[in-house]
Amino acid sequence: MAEIKIKQVAKQYGNTHALHSIDMTVADEEFLVLLGASGCGKTTLLRIVAGLETATTGEVWIGDKRVDQLAPKDRGIAMVFQNYAVFPHLTVFENIAFGLRMSKVDQAEIDRRVEKTATLMHIEGLLKRYSGQLSGGQRQRVAVARALATEPEVLLMDEPLSNLDALLRMEMRAELKSVLAESKTTTIYVTHDQVEAMSMADRIAIMNGGKIVQASSAVEVYRNPAAHFVASFIGNPPMNFLSAENAGDGWWNVNGVKIKGPNSSSKTLKFAIRPEDIVVHGPSGNGSAANDDSLSAGVRILEPLGSHLLASCKVDDQLFRIVLDSDAKVSPGDTLQWSPQPDRVRWFDPESELAIN
Image: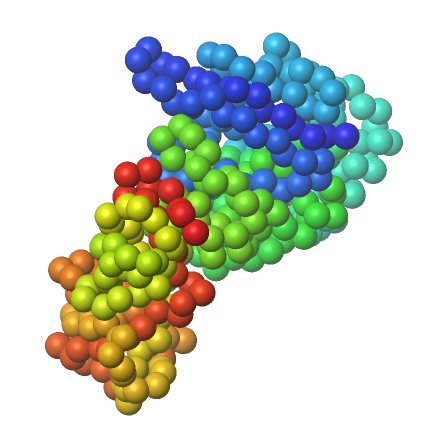
């Protein structure tokens, strides 16, 4: 069983805290993605699990074995790096077989595993080629095949698709997800790309400032962000935020309009709604006629995006984005009347920045 337990792991460089007491469990066969912006600590955490960095404090367990005192080669892991690290002087076959030869696996078993993983990654016809004869996507497949050939308990991947173009990245996302589901390997995958994270992960751990802010399924972090940071980071475009003043009895004044929200003693909260969860009223919108409960948004910029039209507006002197039908009759300078879908609104405490609903 390759369950990973990270217990109170912290990392400090001088006076700089890269990680703050991380506690996390990755279930056996789970595909967990560490997601966050550059500098949030996700690669540092991955490298501590791999044994390439030493934690200042804390423990790392794989299965029933504590591994933070062990060398990387003794942890039962394999790692795929951002730059592939495919050996140019070796054929594809020998690249895939490299780890097996280092472990002194016999030739018949090497042949079997290389053939199996090459077929899994759809590169069985490339085994006699050298890396200079391969495309970027093919080299990435070789790197993954080499890692899987060792049949590791844990696979660690550090932004493995970031050097590929957009179309190839999309193809590789689907392929990797399928391959890792078939191999049943416990995987930790680092990325700053939220589309990669949401499309591939069983669970996403969102990091900020060396802490895990939320660890949930893709649907959960998208629909129910636990903190202001998650709401502002997940989604393209992310959530809109407006200030809300307490009007009593669970009603909140948002830009001059009362909206039902949580019962709270706070004087102010942050009202949040996703651009696609907004109903625009009237002939130019996507809903019914405006009423006294609708809010106003002044259109500044329109971006036609094929399946929809993205309107960047101003509400209460703040940038506010609204997704419209692609054929909506709207022009810059227009004023839109809109209402939020009530079950899609999130409310955040402005001091703790945590969700309160």
